[in-house]
Length: 143
Length: 143
DNA sequence: GAGATATACTTGAGTGGTCAATGATATACA
DNA sequence: TGTATATCATTGACCACTCAAGTATATCTC
Image 1 (cartoon, rainbow over the protein chains, first blue to last red):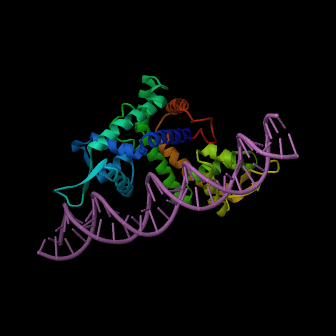
Image 2 (cartoon, rainbow over the protein chains, first blue to last red):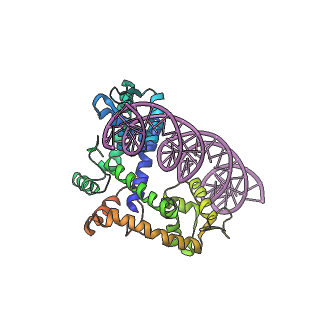
Image 3 (cartoon, protein in one colour):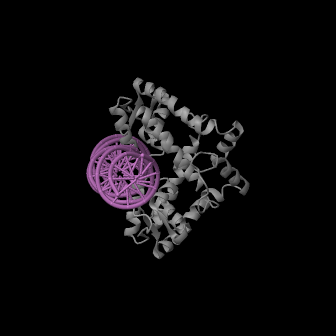
């Protein structure tokens, strides 16, 4: 209960901050982040879906927005005609850099300034035992 | 990051379980739970909004569904003409009882069986320091 | 007691996402 | 080689929710 409330409140907050300052959804941000971290700055849509916990159709629609804004571009795969890569553009990388300032400040206010290093470690350790918390993604150190 | 992922995955899971077995959203469930715990089993809509972290309009629409299903009824307030109470009906209480079996089993699988009592305490203690985690609500012990 | 201001709720329009169905390609195997 | 099955992506229909605006009632202050 408290866990659920806590998260809900936090995501809202971070999301609102991001939208207010950069017109980017928290999901948008996460997608950009994962792309920036991937080899060639490109990822198959389905892998993206896995990483940000969205359905494939959610990813399609989200990427429509980012492509339209010029932050991400589509790319075909030579060896598999079914896949369509999402590749981060220079503009997207730039946008991510700007947005990360906001986001990291928000995260800082919520976590870093609120807990000691040991507490953060403890928290991370506990949460890692939840299913689907999955392997480390980019920027885990900060969150 | 991990925190956000963990929560997102968990809420989805619990929500899906609840919908599959009782056609109830996780928010619906939380509303019923708060009502059951309130004096007279009734709450002002705005208080409900605070407790389940939804906007007033979200509550209005959610309650439309629950009223339509007969789980909640509207009630005027004698001393303040603006407020409309949401009161849990017998059917609603019954529904809550059924649903809580599912929900608590889900929570159990995710938390209770995964952490020791001390760890749960630790987790609760850490999370309580997050903003908006707010005061204890009903059933906090289990979550 | 008459505004001005604040509070409780609802509504219309829009958003971010889901699910189920579809099309296209890839893989496995008789 | 051809058919069955699985996988990747997209689309249409829908849902839960938000925001901004509107209505109605309450409270405060002069």
